[in-house]
Length: 275
Image (tube, rainbow, N blue to C red; front, side, top):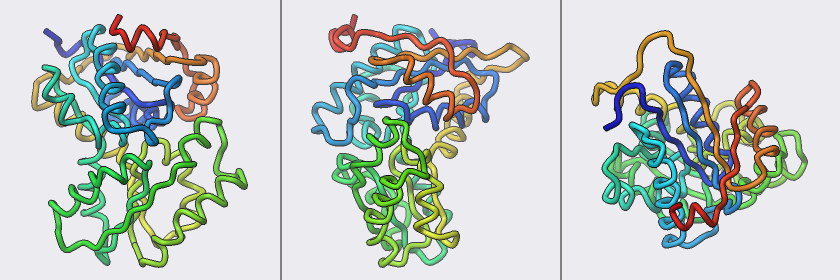
């Protein structure tokens, strides 16, 4: 059985989930962290729900062989499509990123007009709409799929890239016309484009990054289960990817603000076979 010294497992379709890992590392500096990025099969957002569920289950099985005490689905697409299935399948606490982000949006909005941007699969699932409406049915909502953002981030393009700025203007126009005062980043890749998004939305519109809320929920869950690691032990971070560890380390180092080490490539076919 896992104890407080066991690591936290985190997975995403690619590098975007590092925004969640970064916030968990800040909030819980004593915790060992395992990260699995399915970089050979990214993006998940254009795939069908059965495929997303199958990939997510495989990712969980890979991490569970390393005996984590908690799993974090650091992918909005997987959280929206697969979280109930994963919780039914595995006997370990599993957190997603949709519920924390929805709660933060409800708390943040002043004019009760909220926009959600995400992958095609996340928007199609209506997960954020349903969660926010369950919390406050009086909030007016608008959502928009932004399918170019994930591949742009995975390519290492930043907020100054003209393609990023052009895509942001196109995707965010309906939200601005709707009069939102709060926008939920419904994909863990999107915080890496936050400056470009803010440049289009303006300073008056709040941006909700579910990574911070997910880190808070992770700490609360560990406390509730008596599994928070304490003491002065130096935390260890290990990264597993299904393609191109050198590129992951390069882009990941920019995201994390320090050198990303201990990146290991795993065969995606072996992950699919649960080996």
